Length: 82
Length: 550
Image 1: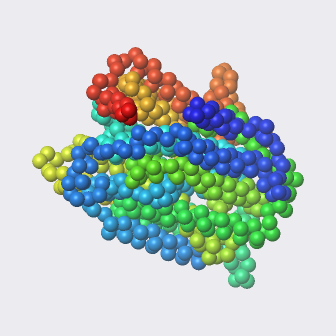
Image 2: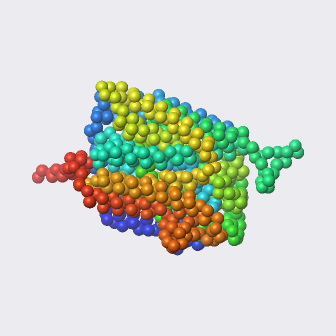
Image 3: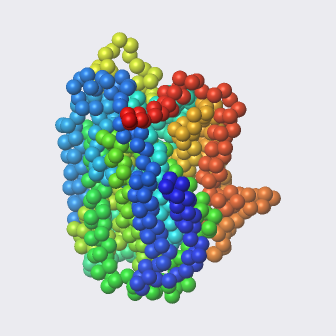
């Protein structure tokens, strides 16, 4: 699944360069320029892409990381929540 | 007057939030500088987003859209909507892990330890601090401009008619001057950062983001109602030979549009974002952040860009310096006074994202310079915490005062957007390969990082010089012509547009980033590999999962 996600991210970045709409002045619903609508929808697709990445490529090794630094130990010694 | 009073109330609220955060503080340096790494997931999302929403995002984006059209959304916002969440996902989570594991609070602390080179860390500190300062000044300048704009009213003659200036436009007067407005913003930010530290800053940012998202929607609706919908204005623009290009991307070249994709790489290299990544209580808090971040960007930028374009029809003939004020102008002209006031406060909220930069610069100064070079021997760690927190607070006062003085002295010297792009965004973006190499490439070396950082420094100075020295060429550009050659003998190598310098039509940031990455790789491979114990520290061998007993 990870390779598929990688390919999709590359495709999505390529889709950002929507040269086919460059000089198009069509107004969607009579008041929204089509180039604006495209990039607003692009942000929505980006959000869905990040949801997919969280599902398939989350760095699980970070979920149970423990502090080893003296600073964190000091705070813990003082009875504070690190 | 009412909008500016609402803004005053808002300023009082955020100051109170900072003081309230002070009451929750434990007094340790980890608490003051990274909120004890304890932020919940919604505060983390909203404050991280709010930190990145600056004067430039609101005032600069609408001003630029006024001049260049709807393409500004793709140029800056939708590119950020994919690149920033990706960098937070891949880099931000790792920075959080390093902070949690080793107690790092800044990028420089990590680089120093990762490559065992103090001087490299000092160089990166000096460079990032220098690039961050203009960002803070922009915030203070933006604050002054918004306060002045919201408190303005037309000058009337004895008969009650508006007095016109020499340019035929109505004269206005403001009861809050730019100088006073910017001083107030600097003072309030200084107040809540001084008291509340990172927790106060994060809470204020979260509050500001919610305020802007909620009342931004209301304002767009009210402006639309007042104008009788947007269709009529858009139709007029489409019919106008002069304004129709704003409805497409005719005023932006494809190469420039492409190279803007590199700019959002700056986000994760901005110290205020990187430090903010270390404040989350759990790494799982990043999940909602990366998913909702693109939606928040769309919610803020789509109206700002759209209204900026609309303003070209409603307020024609504004100069580039005046276009940054189109949103406040729309608010005062097309909404009820109370909405204009609350939205003015919302804009002020974005302008005051400068709080995160002040907090970040304070953390960097305290951790990377003060604690690193002036650690007092024989002082126990609790006394040391106390010293560092108070050194940080003294620094907050200093940087706020200096920023205001510069904002006051250099007002109208440079456009908000230009200043940010030239001195901060490109440089930070070009440094991203260094962070990637540190996190993901065991073989990367200090020498590679030195070469990359020095290259970025030289390239930034060079592009700034080229930009300034080719300024006179802009006047020679005919309408409809986007570029002119700076050195005709070199062909299209260096081109000058109204926006700035390009290299073969691409923004310098693209070349800076690619060459930085290449130098990092080549010089690392040509120099001695890092010590095994350091590699093991930052790339611990994965322990295989135990096989279940049969």
